[in-house]
Length: 162
Image 1 (cartoon, rainbow, N blue to C red):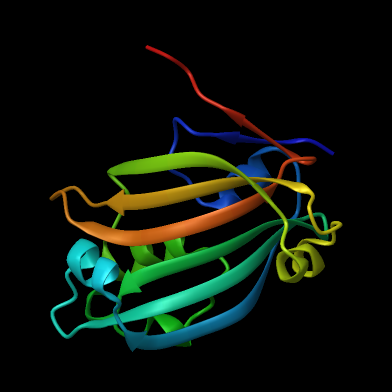
Image 2 (image 1 turned 135 degrees about the horizontal axis):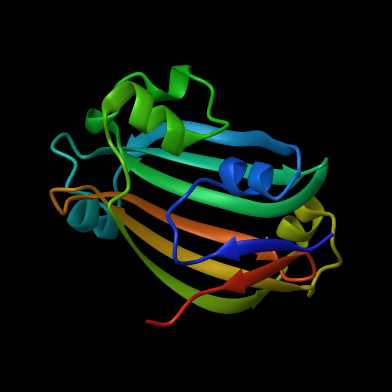
């Protein structure tokens, strides 16, 4: 199995997995509300100083492909943690009218730590794509900070130059 992650398009993991003929899966490891750290406070600007921190394992056809950590301003998405977190982008669009207008992504190489290796079903030290993302709405406000670790043995990253 080889999954393509098109970096030119802001779409949720379930969307592009389904488009490639895979059954998407999500396992929520943690979904909590907490105080924003200084970087989150500056970037997300939560009025009340609180954020939602969500950690999930995403799978294709039952095989883990990514470990995701997403942070959102809590006051912008009240009640979000009570809903299904299988596709947060779809939920934000449907329930809150928030769509991704622009993303800034930084792509790094990483290796699986012992903890991430267990969650991704790989050996510690296995190659990973480390994608750091900030997502912005149509007004230019940042509403997401994420770090996604994708299995490099299953995921190909593509982009189109213009």
